[in-house]
Image (cartoon, one colour):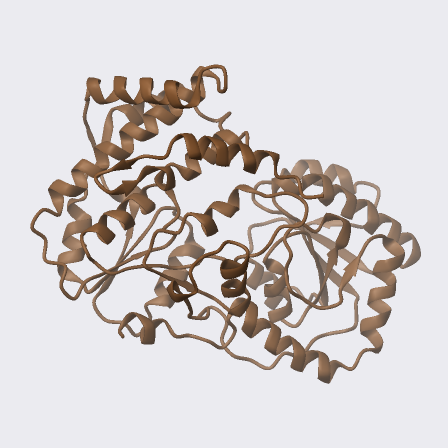
Length: 423
């Protein structure tokens, strides 16, 4: 049965905070902040963050300069090397573009006491003190003030701006300030496009915060990696089909898949923190498996949210090791000599397949319903059974089927960004 308690509470809070400010739907701008509260991820909120939200606005001078000097400007919020690399690949061969990191735009100090008081009383009235604690009330109110301050700054900076032959590209138009800025450019009749930093799936056990990326899209056009994302957005999330375009993923060039089936050395790709309980289950199963097949080598690749010391302790007394270092998945797949993999609720499933590794999925833990091969296991015996199945399988047919699967999911061999953006 699907556990959607947190998601339902998020929907209730979001419904209470629906309002327009100069045409911008603030329930979508606030969606991620509301979810932090509803999904119990607001513990990290501190007084300093709230004070900062109440007393600052973004200076959009550099964004205007980028828009003046380029045909395409891509704004992104999270400073990750894989994200900046994806943007560079997306715009390969496209002239006159610039990527702008939101965090590098300066912040100006501002203090508008009436706006602050109004936001506090509005949030108290709409949400109710009995419904939420005072810290979360002030947090949400501070975000309203921060967004309004920055919306005002955006209007001043782009007053009289000529948008002809300009396109604004958001890395994720469902995310906080990116949602605000995307909606602002929609109103200004500037074409807006949103990229995808992953693909969209249905959920089987519980609904995570990630669902916001599907339900709060604000761009006029959404570029997705493959057919499965388009189908899920259309069917599950009721996103209008006419705004979705399959653009592929330039990270994954077309290649011939050559699956390995020797099953001697395995990289285990554990899920992020929300999947820790099932990560532990998988490690226990690997220990059981080693009592049957002691010559197989297992190495754990931890998600950044996981504690290395904890997993080293969990593996103590077995031959299972935790990978030391911060190599990327690509570096591991290309250089470490693995011949198969195991994954827990991660899109790394497809990356492993792309690098010719049969990848097994732990069925009892599966929440993110990825389209894939017949590769589920539930205990040590079924893992061994699946390994024996693939040892005897027709690899030629498997490789052919997998090439189509990777095209439909991660957009292997498809790169339509230049075609779509310059149309």
